[in-house]
Length: 131
Image (cartoon, rainbow, N blue to C red; front, side, top):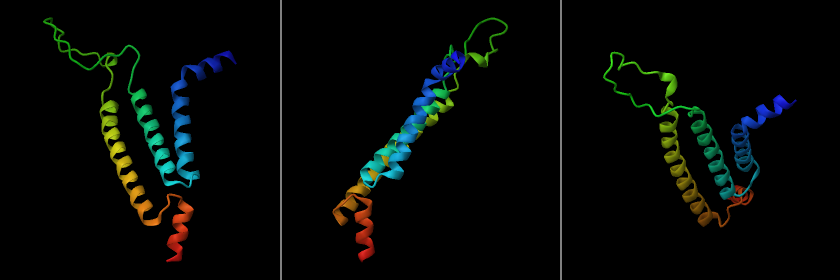
């Protein structure tokens, strides 16, 4: 029992990501307000980014810079010492996409509000059905 508890507590970051993902998913599915849906989408995207950045790290790892020694084995690089930079680089791109998605979604929400005078999904759908 103690071992199970310690394993759960050592992987607390995964529990945080799962919780953030569920909060974002709940907001996107259950809320009727479009801004709340957009905020839920942003929370979900942030959880994914945090997850990928965390799995890209390694305890005791360093940045991947080749050491130049003047000895005979100067070209030998031990890959186990280095952190893989690919997840971090990809998540930088994901952050840019996330910000762009948030901006476009909020701009669409403003346009929808100007046209239907509401951000509630039920009211917008009712107005669409009346036409």
